[in-house]
Image (tube, rainbow, N blue to C red; front, side, top):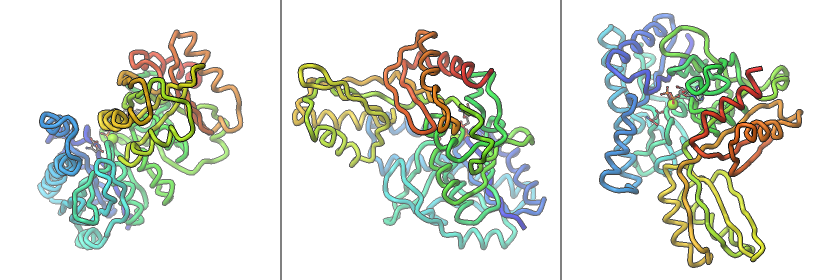
Length: 403
Ligand code: ADP
Ligand code: ASP
Ligand code: MG
């Protein structure tokens, strides 16, 4: 008997009718002879609604209580899906993260899964039940509820598949798989039959939210076969696999856009050793992930230090930076939340030159100004004005993929 982990995202469980539809799909997989563990997200829009409630009370809410609050979204959907399964005659049982002990570290809002105790899940499966697990949440060693970061149900699902040794992890969502770029931005986007773990890590880290990045890292580490596919059709989706030889023939496999970062600039700080450590040390201690960094030295011995952080953390980052302003002798600090990071990704870049040049020429032709640039072995990212992001995605898709 095969063990399947299926994950259904927020737009797949956005209404009672949709939850009934998911129950039918899950029951069919069980009837076909599989053991099934289902992971669900909160109903579409619910996590945003809960975050907004907290922010009505505090601009920077206490992180522990915020996690207690936003973990409730998934509590609703596990119960509703279990009810829907029982209603059609399929025995089912719901579990929250702490009940089966999805153990995480204590980084509230972005906790990492450390281990999962499979005892209760295995018992329930043996009893013929479908196990419905709340995504996005876990518990730290002091029994505090933690959440895994936006889109974290993907990570719950892949981690469960890894710890349970599932045959596959199916990620059911509102598109038919992983496309060459977001099909909602670019109608020319093509569905990929397969994509390497490494390319998917880069796409996910650069904004292709179809999979959360840590889920892909987990999948790669534990060689979990992941199948991204549509909740609403039965067509084959996209498989995540190890890189194979045919893949490096393709120069760019995807274009991604991320509007969830903010740019912070420390204006005219003295250009001296130790400065970066002084600025970024406290930010790292606060578990805020800094993505791109650029430093613009000027003639007068000062430098502008610009970096990007997740938009959700920019208020906290700003308050940390503001505290260090006198010590680093900066002239001031500027914030820009209206930016977008556009990236082109492909394992073919390892062996082919010229991608950066084509990217810059394409953007120049479209009169799109580049504010920051960063590169890795298989990715080039630029930061631009958010207003031009869709335009940039379409132009780059046209330049690299569509023809
Ligand atoms: P879920 O609620 O199922 O977790 P998400 O909204 O998190 O779904 O992710 C699916 C969305 O990801 C799609 O609706 C699509 O707009 C977006 N997306 C961005 N980039 C891509 C891509 N390269 N391929 C497919 N979908 C993408
Ligand atoms: N409900 C959470 C979110 O909206 C987790 C998820 O959807 O994966 O981010
Ligand atoms: Mg998602």
